[in-house]
Amino acid sequence: MDGSEFVVLDSISLNVDEGNFASIVGPSGCGKSTLLNIIAGIETHESHEGGSIQVFPKSGAESTPRIGYVFQNARLLNWLTVEGNIQFVLEAQKIPRDTWDGQVAKYLEMVGLEGQEKNYPLNLSGGMQQRVAIARALAIEPDVLLMDEPFSHLDEITARKMRFDLMEILMRAKPTILFVTHDLGEAVFLSDQIYMMSTKPARIFKEISIDIPRPRQPEDPVIFDLEKDLVREFFRVLEAQE
Amino acid sequence: MIEVYGDPASYIVVAQTLLRIFEGLVICMIIGMVLGLLMGLERNVEAFFDSWIMVLLTFPAICWAFLSVLWFGFSDIGPILTVVLIVFPFVTMNIWEGTKAVEKELVDMATVYKADRFLMIRKVYIPMLMPFVFSALRIALSLSWKIILVGEAFAVGSGVGQKLIYWFEDTRVDMMLAWGVSFMIFMVVIDLVVFRSWERRTFAWRHQIAN
Image 1 (tube, chains in turn red, blue):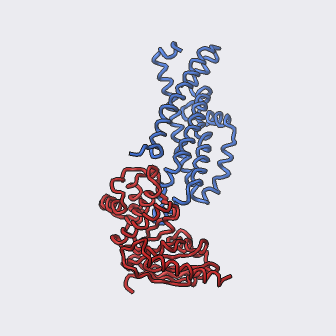
Image 2 (cartoon, rainbow over the protein chains, first blue to last red):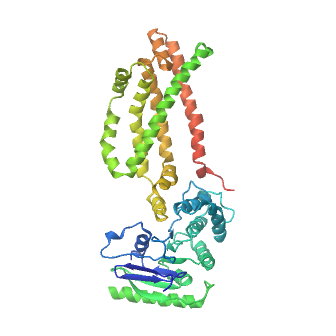
Image 3 (cartoon, helix red, strand yellow):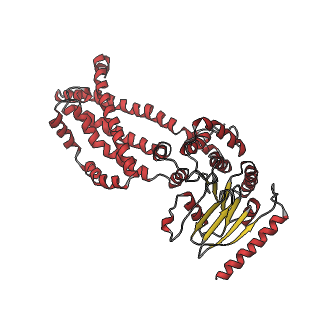
């Protein structure tokens, strides 16, 4: 399929279309964060037996895809300003300097932090720091955006707002996303596809497409019903394992 | 003390000593930071230098002082070399420990975004090391000036150290104290004024008040 990514890990295979939002949902310890880290290159897959990772970027020309990553905590460099943090990854990705100001302004505005360029991370709230991390990831215009439970360390109110804002951001920026979470409601609200993962052995046991049109409303009953179905599905599988 | 500082020639003497301290300090910091960083980042380097650093640390300082006189005679190099040899292992150890203590999370983040070694060192490692650099600098300074004075007393014909030994041989305790105490006050002032304000500016991102 045009512009799709194909990922294989042991007996795990994921197929994500370009511009799609795919979630990997599973209980803690099922290896979903590890999967993400292997894709991102901070854990080596040689330590795992007999597997291979292949990611094909949409351009096809580059051999290594551009990857953006939003972690559970913002992981900003506190000694750099907000714009300094974004410039850091732009420099790391060897993006030409004359585009930097434009990219910084554009993506800060997109996450609702326009004007914050010269501020330091320690002066920002947790939610704002995470927004900077999102702007940072988007600013390099990645082939794939990896997100590892990015809202799990925020309070519920802030997390809800961030989810909604993320949905709106992605309608404008349209990256391809691989999102890891243990929160099924979050996954249903945000995703086009959900991969359900179980543990022992780590495997994907189901794939679901979510066809609800965007913009989605968090209070939408269809979302609740779908979440309930998936929870039931999870319990069925987990109990069958015991 | 007025006798000492009323005479303009005294200031030249102080300046000589300060210059030697400065030179020794700079050399120490450069060697210490480079070596410490290398040891923290590269396993082979660490393994190689580990024992050497411990040897240098435990080598009696006084031997260095005498050895430099033997090798270099009564020139400037003696005290400076002594300082470097005695102090740079401390700086190295400090920076080395600091490098190993860097937050893996931030290094991982930079790795994911494909920051090359040079960018990683410039924007991640060095800022994270600054607290260690400052503590190493303060230790190095406090060691260096005493060593320089001793070195000057024994070997070189100039500087504050020389004044100390001159008045010692003349059994003029008051003059010894005049030179010694005033110089010590001088060093304390430098520490407070230069280093504290430099430190405050470097860590401004911690203390900044939100707009």
